[in-house]
Length: 365
Image (cartoon, rainbow, N blue to C red; front, side):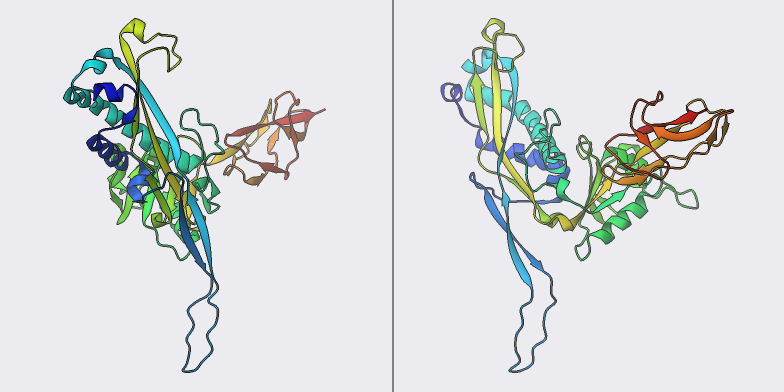
């Protein structure tokens, strides 16, 4: 095995299976949805949009078109790679010893694959740098059902999300650690915690009888704090065995350190995984709240202006001013204290991005 693996080969069968078994335990999407086989060239999944209801037909009665439309959704495999340096002992080790060395690498690679699956599918990004990738399609960024997270009212937010998915059933909850922490602090009118299962950072398998997973990958990138929906409408899988390449020379990870000069070899593993949201209407996103904040900018009276809260991409109305400043008249808001930024009049529309915005009062003589 030592000679073969030094060129390029697949993981030993038992380790390949371990990788994807471990992925299921570390990825919210893998835990909540079903795995399917994915062909190397891609797999077409067919969905049916059934707008009309079933028709009652009497004897000799005319039959009608039910209104169904069939749409193919392609699950396209994406290559995900990860590498690590190990001692060059690997090159001369026995097969048993090589597997012994590979096993912890397997566990690490599984974790990286799991995190990659969530981050790619939820936020449409390259997991390495968080940059949006055009290679990714049929992901959760296409989900237009969105609910703004209101701290203290997660229960109501999830109820609202469930309403948005219509006839679909809620089969799973993918919660970020941020959302889960907020939920764990919520109490009812008697002061009793609503979600004691989430205390101390726990990740229960179910919440109110619904399959649940808490994971930092949910909001590592993007603006979603949680995904609520029918996870039968999300599929994932891997396209072929995992390939591992042992590189004995050079600087393959661009660290500036030569392998041979440090008695090291580089293990690089590659896997092809695919996924698709089959119907975006089967899901709703619980969104991060962002705020327009108002700064009096030297005001010496009046009352503070309450934040205007919304979600990324939402147009909100700029608040009226309630600050006062002796000898001055309020004229407008501006994104810069010195007025060199963008002007906003009270009542104007401002489209929120994925960050809070501060508007500064501008005072005229």
